[in-house]
Length: 113
Image 1: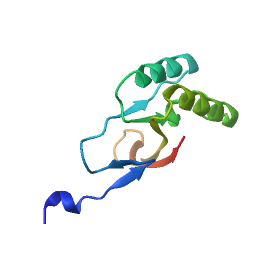
Image 2: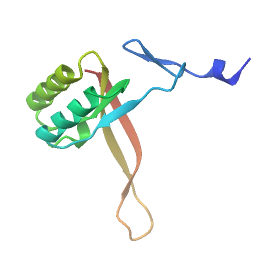
Image 3: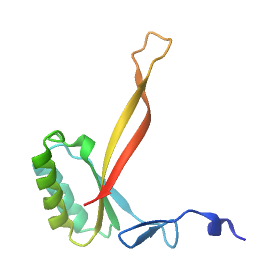
Image 4: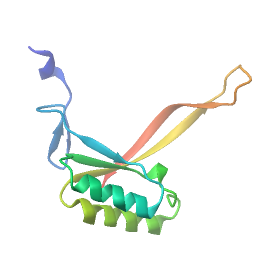
């Protein structure tokens, strides 16, 4: 049995990750509406397979209404291209050095938009 046969496959809205050709997934990491929309338009014009919106980088991430409105706008711009949202949460670990606590482990919350 080949090593490829043992790889896990993740399917997101019909796109199988882990099989076939490598997929191109581009993150949207802009903080402000205008630059986020401009980036989404550039991605929509590309041959990207999927888009990941990093909500944790969005300046209005704590305003539920703005997040939902921006998700709808991104979806409108990218069309049928698969999209997911990602929120990275850093877990601080204390160290014995005089350096401040640093982010070490991260968890991701992901959902399709």
